[in-house]
Length: 437
Image (cartoon, rainbow, N blue to C red):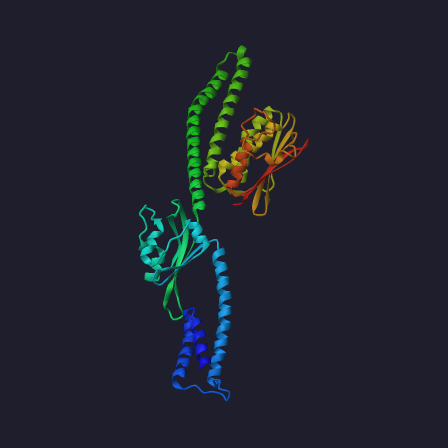
């Protein structure tokens, strides 16, 4: 009988959880029945005798002792996991009493409070987006206990116990035993205060950048409007001068008028380049992509540049490998790209040199290439030729350094890629490919 009583005490000590109760309580009941249902028997030496049932109970007691040792180890492991977790963890029972709080939770909240029930959750201060303070019923832990609601990734602005404010991102879920009985709830949360501050700063910088772009576009619009009108007058007046001068003064006046016209064209191109750069930054460089004959595009490109090449004693020729080809593009922008490449070639090709414009099919694309016989570009400078404001010669007054940048932007706006190849003393080749129609 003493063995039964000892086994019963050990079993009661092992009642750690609902699952323990489910397994052990029937054994305890059987022991109670045995204690009440029969008197003790003794051996010849006077000690209490054990029947087979008592031996089974004794074996059960020893198994429970072993289970207690294993359970203690598991609890130790669980305690280590909880207290080394970077996320805060709170556990309460079905009445809302806080049963567990790990170190991360205390760190995030800069302290802790005793919570004996749902009504005490007001000791933890939090606020709605409109500034209203949380009531106890607003907490996800309360909603879990009362409605079985699972909360996933909820952002909450909190006031820590040291008075500072922060943001947490948390989830909460109810806890049930295997029979479906509510045991409590667990809340797991992370401090996202630093991320929210970074997000707010990014939004501020984005607004500043957008305002700067808007101001720049406004300035460019005003400058281009105010400069284009007088430039048109200058160019028109220069043309009239060339037509109206007396024969004996023709050479001198014609030379001056040509200088005025070149200056006006240069200023107009600068304005156009600045506006195109702003359009590229705003994502508005390419307007409408449709099918266009390659022959017509090349003819128009040559028509603009042959007079300039003749004036500089430069041979300009085009070669189309397969007449009748078409491409899908924004026609005016592709013409502008070719104009920038040809203009760049004219700028760096010496008198008596040659420029070639070749067009040939490459798979599902058509490649355009402009080759000149200029002095070439140094290898260390070649990777920078498409940079904004880059110029081959430092201090050059030949332009703003936007032509090749805009050409690259136009090609990329069509989904293509532009390349530059050069060798000192043997000239430079620019090429890009666009999709066939």
